[in-house]
Image (cartoon, rainbow, N blue to C red; front, top):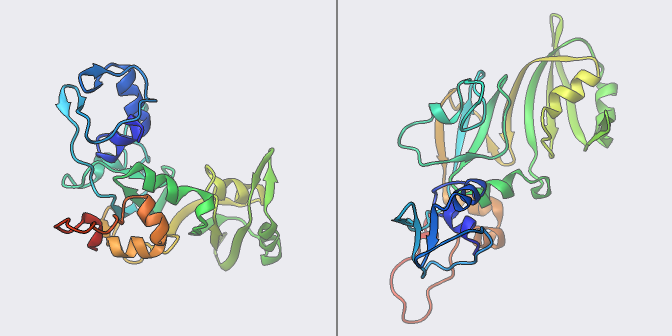
Amino acid sequence: MRIAKALARAGLCSRREAEQWIAQGRVSVDGVTLASPAREVTLREEILVDGRPLPAPVAARLWRYHKPRGLVTTHRDPQGRPTVFATLPSDLPRVISVGRLDINSEGLLLLSNDGMLARHLELPATGWVRRYRVRAHGTITQVALDELKSGITIAGVHYGPIEAVLEKPQGSNVWLSIGLREGKKREVRTVLDHLGLTVNRLIRVSFGPFQLRDLPPGAVEPIKRRVLVEQLGPSMAKTLGLIEPAPRPGERGSRRGSHG
């Protein structure tokens, strides 16, 4: 595998950060300092980061997190705003988010310690629907919302099919249920603004098969590996390292991928 992937799978950093570390001369393989992230490596080689051996690869994991409003989904914010990752429990390993929720959005955010898993889950090609409950100022009809089923282009950006249901009016606001598969930046707010609505509350209630339910704001809960494997399917679960090949004849001991 590529050296950046090896560092990411060991839970040290993201692939992008690994490439930066390599450019800074912080990574060596068998005593040779790397100058390029294109190097292919095996775990039989001696990989050092800042002179320290690479930790053993960690098992890919996934957590549900209830993001409160007022936090940005980034590890460091140049504006000094509070971040999701600064507020996570101290016993949680280094994690990255599956997609993002903007500072004024709340609800379900999936977290993973594995960059490959996170990237797979956030790709539109995976086909998982993100569902939201939205409160917006203004009025609209179900007929107008139904037109979003065929997608919409706004300012040159095309948004794919969107499921939108008018739930109820509430004073000068309306509550909507929104489902989409792409999750482009500020997609819900942009589309509804185009329809004359101003979003004043946006809650993600589910991401694919995983739901927010009664998880309290700020709380984190692990998703069992067997559940994740069931949702991904055996082929993709094996590709992502959640299932390892069965031991060959003569091998002893259980594999980490065989337990939920």
